[in-house]
Image (cartoon, rainbow, N blue to C red):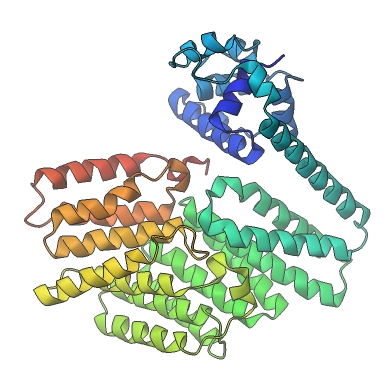
Length: 459
């Protein structure tokens, strides 16, 4: 028997466990907000449970029933009953009879069958690697170490491109396993250094995750852990990168002096490095200096970033990609943001030049297929473009620049993006254009966008 729950999951394209689990967490948090029952926001779902629900082998119990009813907007008894005939289902979903595939077609869809065979094979692979790691529990086996390295590379590469909810659990799991191996005392000296480096990278990504979730305190805890692990690994590049991360966290937490301190500390640690982290640290220094109104430091730091770019040579951190590589397009974004943060220029020529630079930086993120594209950076540069156009008196152009950001789904509204659009809202509230209809409407849109929970994930 195919339940209505299964059919709706198929039709919504939620057949992948990470996708459904993310939607389930969103519904749990939404229900918690509506009912005031905070415990609902912490509900999670294992892959095996999802599999059994989908196949109709077990029925959801207790609060899970309420969350599913809230997620699909239907009584739980209806969701767990056999799906109606295709025309009845189409009518109940607001479509014309015959507009959706029949239940038989859904069951017999070769693509769906292939998809589920792939999922089962992936689940078996994860179960197998858990067994392998258990078999090597009294030592740090090469297969366990290689698995952790592969997972770190996979997550690092996709972090900037996917919603956090799709990778957060995997990231926490590999950190936990790495810590367990370090604490076991079974690692060889050469393995210990590798494990500490992995722990530093994992903790760094989890620090970024906490930052994206709007929790700078937890972010800094993870960053300090990453710093300790990087020192234990004796990895100078990672130590410098962690200082950059601490600068980033401080920058968005409205602590510009700390952001400036960490950026300079990172530059000092990494003064002999040739990787792109050196360019990142210079860009971070420029942005932090802009927040305190130090135009000369902004100019010098941006110039230093350009000079460092000319002499960079890819290193092992750059090879990880994602947040560990600082490409030219991000450098252009940082440079423009630092200039935008210095405030409105009194010179029309300077304002026009800043708009052109911001437009060039924004074009760098148009290609979502670019391996260095990141939705957060794209949103950031679009808001910088909006601010630059506001400085030039172009209200409609500013609205055009920021509206794509306001269309981001809740799963991508991280703390940095919320902070960026709030800068636009603040600028719209001042100056000669503040009473214009477009300005008032845009402020309301930004307020609505920012009022929703960051990433719509439990903190």
